[in-house]
Length: 486
Image (cartoon, rainbow, N blue to C red; front, side):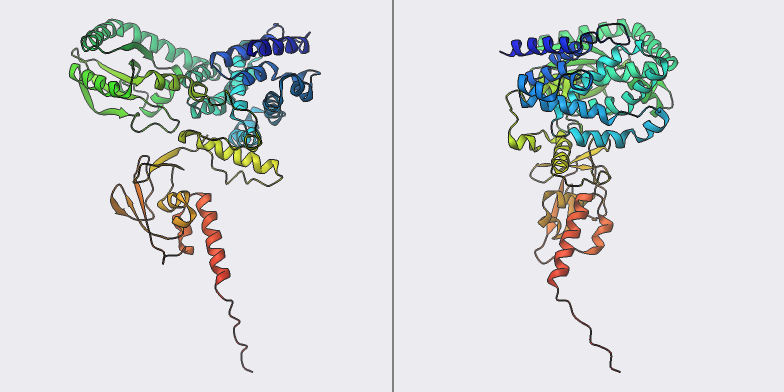
């Protein structure tokens, strides 16, 4: 049935776009077909692929949403409508100088508008990727506008969804249009460095294969070259000194399970000398976007510096394709709760999507959403904080203990007497760090205080505190002062 539905969508889209051409001179249908292929490569579900084929029909052809709903069901129509709205939000932003300073706010608005279904954003990313691949057909001013917008909006979005391969391609193609001279310079530098390192890498590869093979470990070994845009950003951190960048080329080892990851780490360290402070365990402590891997930088017997990345196949798939690799929509239909933005079992690193869905649900109910107070994980760095029992809470960077307490539960927040951070008594003014273990101390006799506003960072905690102080004021009897005697 699935293949027939997709073929039917292709047939309808081809007819709808008949006679339309792209700037490149190709028939317009070549674009939705390319988007379809990208979504298939990402192993997206059938409804998303069909919506990808039809994503421009409502805006650019005579086909209506009702037509799509009748032919393919409510879910596909819902997705096409989301992509159409997303396009309309961006209409009229012709002047790049006035548009780009507002990019993040505009994106925030369109994300909220489409936040009921993250698949809308994934279709948009596929759409943007193909537009980037065919950017040469557009005039230079359009090229630069789309490229800048990609670097500021869509590549960060791909990163937040941990779609690493997409982020790299988007960033590098966009950078080649934004700053072509610098792009070519860095591209040539990377190629030159890799050529000079070929013999060294071949030797290291042979040594590692021999050692892991002798231990009977099943593994895949490959090289990873740093992308041009990543190098550009990293050089800015290190005063343009490329000799301080140790992960220009990395060896990637993919194994069957987590236990083997740590076994391989030990074997690599028995072969080469690990550099102090250069071991990063993103398996035990994943990055904010859910990325997991062990990174270690070592010095070889020939005094060469090389980074190793060790991970499982599942971690590698997630690092490459992110949310699309572990997609949970395949069997899910558009239930009533789903339409309201209530999607269960989101990974902790994607909790910002829940914020989007809740905001979208409020908008659909005609309620106001204060976009300034809506803290999203798209642009603000998040930190993961652990409870003593190992539960994880995500908070924006800059959060304080009371923010953590109110995220756990408003009743906990309202009775805080103190905090232990990593086992030590700490001040309520202490800025929390990614990976901290935080224990909130409470007492039933303690009540919320107005002075706590200076010890709070998040709007969520601030609103909860306001509610508690308001209730407390209602409980206290209002005393009428006696009239002064004449």
